[in-house]
Structures are given as structure tokens and as C-alpha cells.
Image 1 (cartoon, rainbow, N blue to C red):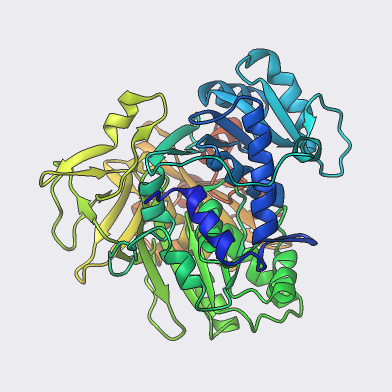
Image 2 (cartoon, helix red, strand yellow):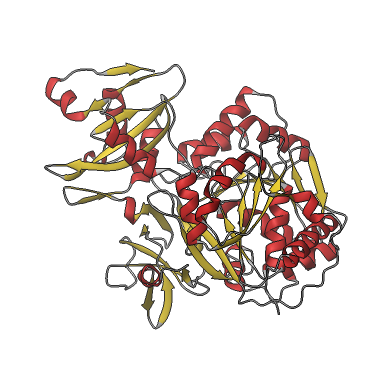
Length: 547
């Protein structure tokens, strides 16, 4: 069995040729059309000398061409490298060099940055530009010109489950790093190759497409950009099963609801509160038909209990799912929320997936009720690209088996479920107490005047670190700091409450909607706090600020 991303898509293309595969903006393409164009692009790249193991970058917002590039790359047994489209030139230089890019597909709007770094990345010897209506000058080869006159035949030879998939991640606090997986392993943990609830592997590479023949296929909308793993692994397994994937060039909450209405979307995948909050508010502002929806699924970021409740109230027949995981581990747990069911506060509380455990500092499974690090066994990544030292730090042996430990902390509950607490490297150590930012962020965002918030640690002479928050108020709202402090203290212990607050016009987030903690740290260093707890506590003042 190939158990390869390209093969899995090709089985679907053979089974569902006339079905719509991708809808993006005003355009659609069928499985047969997508297959033919991906083959043409693959032939062009092969004609330029690219093949097995070569690294090809994708620097683009969501588009049909982006999906074509992903598939064409894997058809050649080459390796796709996702490029964050918000990177500036210095970051691009680092990524292009570190990832050993030899080819790049980019939107025309990004041409000035690409041209500016070319002299510093001599390995990058071929570039294709996708039209986006901007008219920006570039020296790259037009994408459509590259596909013209290329054969649509599928004649690329056999592939292997050992072919490499890389996802670059971790640019929130430092340089991005590429997580390497075998195709079979990443398919098993993210692409539907193992039934998450039973732990049973699919029997062969045709199982998903065979199952898809039994129904007309679901329509799924992925809100995140394809440069993020959450969107890639919302789109790919949907394609493997013959489902239609709806994409948007950029996240616009009203356009999401219009797309749901237009395409009769059944399942929407989002990235936590950063997408969920503006979406539910846009729903109430407009008049949208959401009767087709059956599920909202959040990945990769905090989806707070209060926001879930808003969805269940507005869409009572919709199932809410909350998945936790990491680029280094895949899904490690999924929680399902139905209207009327009790909700946990704090981080997401989920049923753990196959081979998921919680371990202590001595790499032993914790007892129920205890806190530790999430570890996942079974199909695990190979490590970080070109970083064997860091790779060694994320693997442990437990009971003779190899586990990956991506750095997430969690509590193993008495009923066997897992409550995610947060990333260990973002944990605030204040006076010897550990404070996980996501728990504090949820408490802050439950206040009616707060739209968004990020929590970080800042230096403190007495405590080592103190908890700090960057808060984005709702439009035309005034933050009463004393009232906000009292509100948070009703939900979490006093030592976890922010001691410094910065009011910001907008909380910094990555294109994926994940928190940009690097931005947050820089903001706290470069700006004086809007409010300090010590001043209020000493003077008893009722401090407030209008925005």
C-alpha cells in the first residue's frame, strides 16, 4: 500500500471526478479538473528538474492554485514548505534558507518581498507567480504559462509511505521550525487514517474513497489559511473522502456566513475564539440561513466556554467539537459539546485519542487528578528539520514505547478525560506558581466589555515574573479595571490574575488566528502598562479608561 498523500487524493479523483472538489471565492473546480491541473503543474516542475525530496515553497493565501501546488508537489515525491504570508523580508530569508527551498509558488502581491531576498537564497532557482489582480511587477514565471501545453496524464511512478511531509511552525516566539513526518504517519494521525474514537486503523489506502461512494459527500468550510496545519488537515482528508472543500482568500466573518449559505456548508472548521467570536457576532448582525450546518469544529487555539454557549444558543442543532493537538503530535483529544450539556471552564476538556497519555517530570504516567505533559505514542513525527538536538528533546520512552512530547501541559481528570492547560514554554512562573495563559485569557474574555485578550509573563523583581494581559475592548466600550479584576478573581485564583494590563486597538494574531505571543512580549517591553494592580490596590481608586 502506498499510504501517500498524492495516492490518497488520486483514488478520490478516480472515484468522484465530476464532484466539486474546491470552491474558493466565485470559482469552483471538480476532482477531475483539480487532478488534471495538478498533473500539469507536476509535469512542469519535473521538467525543471525537481523531484523526490526537493523542497517547494507555497507563499499564498487560500486559492485553488494553492491546493494544486500542494498536490503537484506530493505527486513528484517532493516536499511542500508552507510560507507565512505575513513574514517580512528578514523572516523570509531565514525560512527560505533554513528550508532549503529550490522552487517557490507565490501570489503576485508578494513579488516585491520575493525579489528582495533572491540574492541571499541562491538555491531558490525557479519561481511561479499566481495572478491575484494586483499587477505587481515580478521576474517570476506566470503560473498559467507554466501549465500551458503540459500533459494532464498521471505518469509519475510509484510513491512511498516514507515520503516526507513537513509543516513549518513555531514562529510565534522565535524562528519557525519544520516538523517532519512520514506520509503514512501524518495521514494516520491527522488525515483520517485511524478512527480517532476507536483507535482502529483504516485497512487500506482506498477505504476513505470507498466510504465516500456511499454518500454524496459533505461540504466543509475551512476558515484558516492553508499555510497552517489546521487548514491543510481540514482540506486533505475531506478530499480523500470525496467531500467538497470551501475556502476563502481571507477570513471575513460575514463572507463566511455568505459562503455557508451559498454552498450549503455542513461542517465549519475554525481556530478558536479569534475566529469564533467575530463569526457569531456577524451572524447576529446579519440575516443568514445556517440551516445546512451540522457541526462547528475548532482546532489549535482556545475556544472558550462562553463563546461555545453563544453558538449553542444561536444554533441549537449544531454539534460543537474542540480538538487539541500540535504540529509535533497530531490530534491528542477531541471534546464534543451539545446544547444543554454542562461545560467545563478553563482549557478544553477532551476525550484523549489513541496512544495519548499524561506524564510527569520523570516520564511516568500521572495519576488521575494530577498535572503533567501530554505525550502521544504510535505514529509520531521524525523530528525537526535540520535540528537533531531539538528533535531529541521532544521524544521520551515510556514503558518501552516511543512518545512525542510537544510541550502541552494538561490535567488528567478523575473520569479519564484531559483538560488542556497550555504550552509549557508560555507558562508564567510567578513566585513559584505556574500560570497557564489560556486559563487567564478565558476568564478575561468572559467579561462583556472584553473582545480579545492575550496573557504573557513580564519581569518582576519580587516574583520573577508577573502575569500581564493585553486586552482589546469591544467597540465603544470602557474597561473598568477594578470591575474586570473582580470579575476575573471570581473565576480563577488571585495569583493568576493579571497585575499589569495594556489596552490595545487589536490583539496581535498570526494568519492562522493563533496567538502571536512574540508580538505581545514586544508590546509589553515597548509600552508602559495602561493599568497596574499595585496602584489600584494602594490607592483604592476606581480606575477606568475609554477606548
